[in-house]
Length: 463
Image (tube, rainbow, N blue to C red; front, side, top):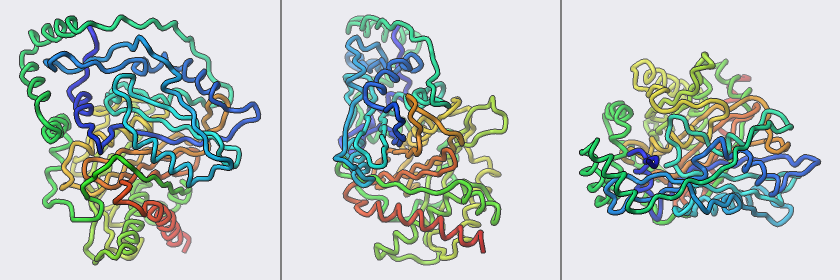
């Protein structure tokens, strides 16, 4: 019997609209080795590792009449070169050109008639660099045992690990009659499914959002404790197109640790405080009215690595009011630390095992989980989503090429103009800012302000 999508995974297919692509992305920058790192090597690497992510050879097929949720089936026409693509910038391609390309690629929806992922090798970058851009639909991230293609293509040494590549033979695609028969069998065992599936097929996106909201009932119970709606900001606007802008910021992990050591709290607190300072300056640059009580409410699904290496990764989701009205950076940090500590002590976090059990290099998967959580909530509850996922502090390689940087690309929730992904890797902290093209024409300005805000906090640590 085919593997049926869960209610939550199916909801992300239904949620996807003309202005809200439902894929999560990542941008990894590599230093080209002397042996080279080209398209053929990337294709060969992906082909070798596909056995580790069998979902990447499967596509979604709808059941006739939508009497049941869609199913995953093997794609009999699977062609790795359709999914692994190449692009190039005019030499020497600079960072601004790369960001423009990322924005264009992320604006395009994935082809639902094929497996829901794409990878782009970007050549022509300056400083002997190559970039790899990944796109994966959120329906593929089940939150329990999912891996993302960007994870399995990386190695801890320049010499790629070897794994036995099993000969893959696609299972025959079920006929419409078989899909209906399987659905009827499921309905016999779960008769309530028929009513729910027929209803979901007929309802619009608004009701689909409610379906996702219910799937995160544990998260929602914590969010309902918010006494007031999120404040009005330029970050909550009606999104009228899928077009995006992308920008990045960088920091050093040791700098953030020095700030934490000086003022207390956690590295996560320092990240949120730095973003608070940047958002404050961004609002002022736009001529917005900023008073001492001005806040921006962030939804911050955070990954927390336990001391027990067997426990995997944890995802905790918080609503936190960022004190953008406070001019003093240290006071901003204390406000954030107090708010985050209060959330943790009140039990308003979501337990790790309820959302994800993955190991190794998991940022792409965890950013996707954060985006899934954010999509479940009304824009009235928060202004911006910030996912912060710690990564490994050792160098990683793909086909012998060393990865020097990695930036998350988090999708926008409905009527949200900005999403910020943060990850750490090999001593660096990397911010990816994904914004609506019309509402966030100055996203690059905000990215610069993030780095300036980190420098401001560093000044207080060295004083």
